[in-house]
Length: 303
Ligand SMILES: NC(=O)c1ccc[n+]([C@@H]2O[C@H](COP(=O)([O-])OP(=O)(O)OC[C@H]3O[C@@H](n4cnc5c(N)ncnc54)[C@H](OP(=O)(O)O)[C@@H]3O)[C@@H](O)[C@H]2O)c1
Image 1 (cartoon, rainbow, N blue to C red):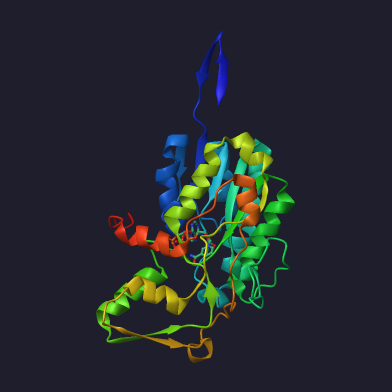
Image 2: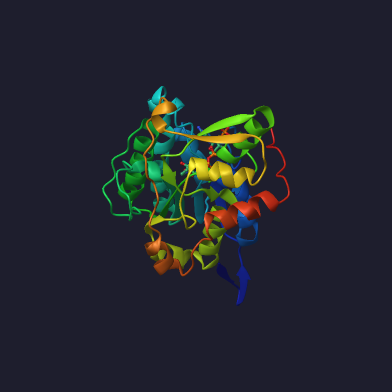
């Protein structure tokens, strides 16, 4: 951003407000966004997204040119028991961020999920496929998408799926832990989606930001952001454990592994709108997984 100053031009770095900075995507974003601006990284302790007044105050204090909302209520099963909290964080907070972004003339980048869909398709979901969430988490995320549209902010809503990384709570780390404890692991083989490394998603976001915020604002809208290929959870587990002889990995059905929240059977997202707009695609999920497991272990989250 160039600010005229007495005949010379002073370049002022934009302020970038990141929520959910301790999360899988948020953690990666904070590091990757640093060359692009002054990052104000907030987490649950410093900005509670369930508190509307706190959101308004944080945005007005930081006066960001860009808000990246990586915070979310992501406990899919627990959301069935805490739908009001899930809606406050995933449904209401994005709308407030949108209203504040509009007021400031800032750009908002937000993440959503394949769980807005019912999973009955057998070919990748385009952005305009009808949403029909099957669980409280998906419903709360859809509400957030709609609240952002209603805010009128220049916003990118990036839907993605099956996020993993070397920190936090995710399938990769769960399978590694179970592999160390058990001789046999049963894994659901009849749900199909795409695993996405959090760093790949953050890097794609930052690549978009690198084009400049006016360019981002011009491309405001809803996009599917995902690695290519597809997998079942069973395929994903096999790829994580590779050729190791132990543990044995046994495919099971969703019916054999009942969970409080119903999951869509199919959640592959069509990414052609993203590619056509931003000019790049993400790697195949197996390639991204190989890069993730080869990367140095992430430090544990700070307290
Ligand atoms: N994880 C997936 O498989 C997946 C799939 C599709 C889309 N997404 C979307 O991708 C985005 C990022 O997800 P992620 O995988 O990075 O999730 P994550 O690792 O669970 O990170 C979310 C972060 O939000 C924080 N948070 C929760 N409640 C909060 C509150 N009340 N106030 C402030 N922060 C709060 C969490 O804090 P604590 O650590 O303290 O709980 C956590 O650090 C989300 O929008 C999510 O819906 C995720």
